[in-house]
Image 1 (cartoon, rainbow, N blue to C red):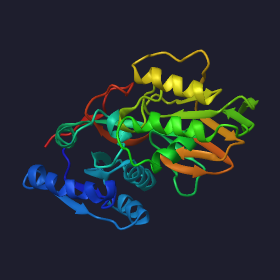
Image 2: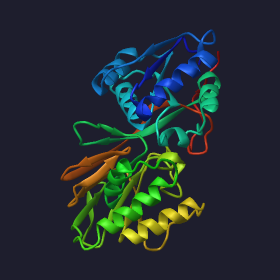
Image 3: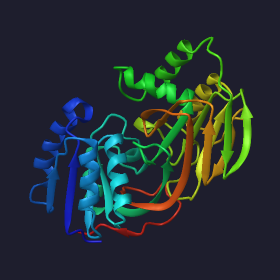
Length: 310
């Protein structure tokens, strides 16, 4: 694919404004005179969504320049447009989870990928939430949602913020009764119990900063990976093992692959790092919904559709 134009959709608030300042340095160093591009700086999530829909075209690359929230909004707009436009990521946020999963961890690699990356078709997860329509990499219900709420309150950034948030949440939750959680997979009730502390729903491999959330998950395998953790301690232990590179599921973890999931009984949750509070979580896989640029195919099960050629 030879793009006719690049559209950068910049979130000016990413990382407290530091992301926007970083973009202008990137623009001067890498973009000017190299590619045909336009910079868009929307003032709201709604404007970002509208821009993504309107700019989508089969011969353009739409770049989400921001964090996980910006990536989610741009991806949603492209899917809603029905266009085969390609999405790229310029990781200017804090966690940058989907960017990590696509092999883009540094700005230099991100720019290189925009110029010569491979195009893959990735799955998305459709939600029943009115604000966040799709999940690109990760959702959680129960303890996982509470951890993300604490994580967003911690001023400490980086890889260690997740295990620290887990420990803080465990301490704050001591003595609180467990909810009775019911889980339906592919329309069939499989569990109704008080023994489940958390459900982690994965499309991608990791949380922010590349922190592993599941041993094996591919962005295009046509399956949602569901892990059910009986206790907070079991989730903390499993995540520590995944972080050390272990490639198997601990015996205490119930694991399912599904095309649709419904969870009831626990309100706390998160979609792509955004804290959610609702009674019922309905999630449905939408296979091959989004064309995305990636630096490598480690977390894709199928070969690329095409490659960028300037």
